[in-house]
Every structure is written in structure tokens, then in C-alpha cells.
Image (cartoon, rainbow, N blue to C red):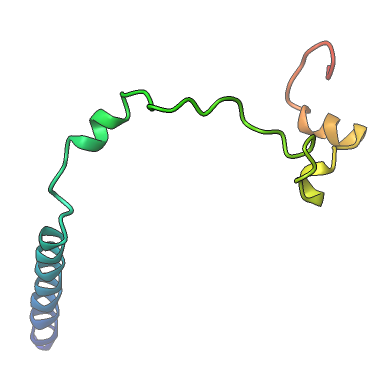
Length: 87
């Protein structure tokens, strides 16, 4: 029975903290626009971004982006794939 004296106040405190978090989320506007994000994903962007820039070709790549895998590194990458090039 002694464990109930500890567990009941802990459970009530956790419930109170959860209730406070819920009221904070209501006040901060977390539930204002529930359908907006779902609809925005379906709409096209207004501006056309065009193709992505290649950082290796325009000289802004760092050392890690410029490094190419060695031949044996490439064969390790395709070890589970069976095709004509990496067979």
C-alpha cells in the first residue's frame, strides 16, 4: 500500500503536466489550421525553382562532395545487385 502513496501523486502530477502542455498548444495556435498543410502539399509552387545546381561543377563543393568512390568501393556498394555492369 505504501507504493500507492507515491504512485497516485506522481500520476496526478504527470496528468497535470500533460494538461498544461495541451493548453499551451491551444494558446500557441497549434490546432488553428489542421487542413492547410494537407492541402498545401497538393498545390504546385508559384515559382519555378528549375534544376538543382551541381556543386562539383560550379566549384562550391567541399572535399567530401568532390571525392568519387574507388572501383573496389563501387563494387562493395553493388554487392547485392546483379546486373551486367556490377554483376
